[in-house]
Length: 82
Length: 401
Image 1: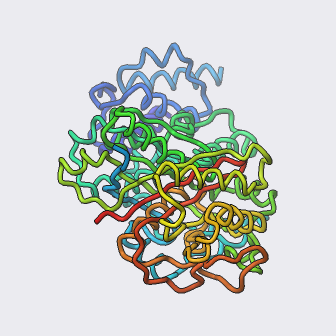
Image 2: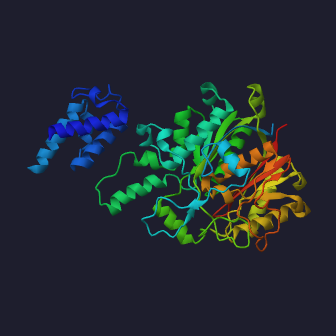
Image 3: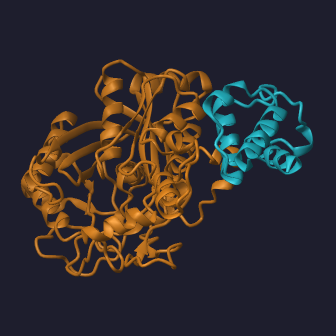
């Protein structure tokens, strides 16, 4: 599941910022990828839409790397299943 | 300083993706009205449309940009880029300019996709770009951002007169000395299911083509597109050595204060009169009128009455044509596309005809330049826009020699 989320996110970032997926890794910083706050809302939307999770506003503000989003969504999915 | 120079033109419609393609069709009387495409699976009764079929968004914008661009913003940008390039404006010259974009419908494509998700598909959330993409002022913001225009920028809405009101507003800002130059015009993309159903419900759409002023006219045909013009004070244009197409010498605005859909010829006449007064012209000085000419039962005789009321005996020698017979009714873009047609007519000495004309309708007794273009050298012309809700705006342009 983690790999799946990671891939979805990387593809969304690549599409949004016109990068290749290979240029993006888990520790890439969102600001270094040129991701604005509107961009990150849009990326989170893609994931929410695909996985049926709801990322709270407070969590959104803390996201700094690609890993933060992937692991955050994983945790949300785990709570959802529990 | 009264006259405002028109120094750049940009246009996209069903007739083509730039001014040259539009003029090639307009000047030969070629209509782009055809079967409505893209709604084959729906219950729509609308059969005809003037769609910009050759417009491929991906060849004008990057995929990441398109996410933020409603179709009407895309059309606005295509026309705006052409107008700016045509006028030869540098980034430094663009910076202090104003931008006024008219639209009748705004971001309907975005709104409808959103409501489809929520109400039809039962999705719990909508795309975060919904607001910035769909807001009525989206096209103005995009024009400002992508062209680097930092002066007064806003959207103006007066239904089918939006572009003429937008152009008039730009003229007023230049006259007032607020800016030296402005880009103004309009854009609309009305081909969405809900909007087409709404137009259908009004029972003003033609089941076939659009035949303004003809006895057998059956209504208007919707069109999509955008038109943008660059306006400058004459001094500013001459100081930078700009090519001047024409002088925008008069604007006239009025409201019917009568009915929400039925036009009142007195209101239209007041706008025409006001435009002439503003241009300091006698009716005898106007050679050509690009009519509002929607092809609806009510507009065409009402507009004809208004022209008679103002022009009196001069109405007889006037050339009056409706280019909506070719590019359809582009709503909030109409005034701009038609001003461009009018400016080109003055420049080229060719009056675009009223296409699809059969026989004059009752109360339609002017020279509508039926079907064949007229080769006439004109000095001054007028372009009419009379919107639903009785909001009228008329422009007067003079050939620049």
